[in-house]
Image (tube, rainbow, N blue to C red; front, side, top):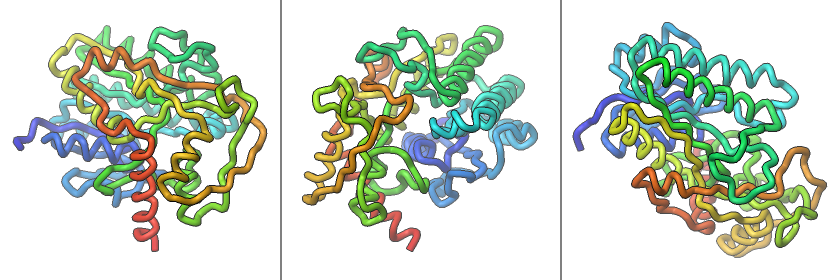
Length: 333
């Protein structure tokens, strides 16, 4: 396959970023990764990519990489993502997510980079009382994490008007699973994602799984979420990039999800089926700020891009997450 050009992937040593690197490389793109390895891992970056260790607000590093490699577009995954931490340490999130993103966007403008894919979040919708959530639902985030992401979307909107740069903000719902070929997966210690926690319990790294809240207005009383396989999400990024290149004056904001929700108990039941064992559940009070239901209205992305989910099966998501968790045990000894 002929190479198409070079894409800069920030945070490409992390969970979602490392899958995007694989998707780009497999599609024939050249890839340069910038990651400070605070939460990412150098071994998670495919060896076909070039890894530069550093921060995205290191203007000399970033601009040097853009110019040296002739970067055509950016996929921006670098940032802090733990919602409760953002409440306790908001300044960290405004520095890592908003201020650093501003620096990256400025570098892109100055170096003539034309296309920008942004890793955004459904947290922008806050505690919206509608489901599924469409992109035109008001953005009223209830924590600094969501606000920091919304501010970056606003910067991209304004910059795209003033400069020859178009963008796509992809608002993720609950990302889960791992590369089906087991090349990378969710590797961060202390992860807060339900499926990651559940497969840690299966592999003996946890004794039980907490279920936070059993009195929501949902069929079984537990929170409902839209789980998207990380490889489908990575494929959406590549499709969005190619759309931006084909439509250079168009910018997009789109949800990334399947439009189908599963409750906490349904997810744990799926893990039980895949493993033929019973995970211990411990019921606890609701966590502050958790919505009853977060499900994507994904009609816009399906209408705009040729992207179609290939892994929209909860048990497959669990199987891939579990296979990676077992491999991660081997990697770490």
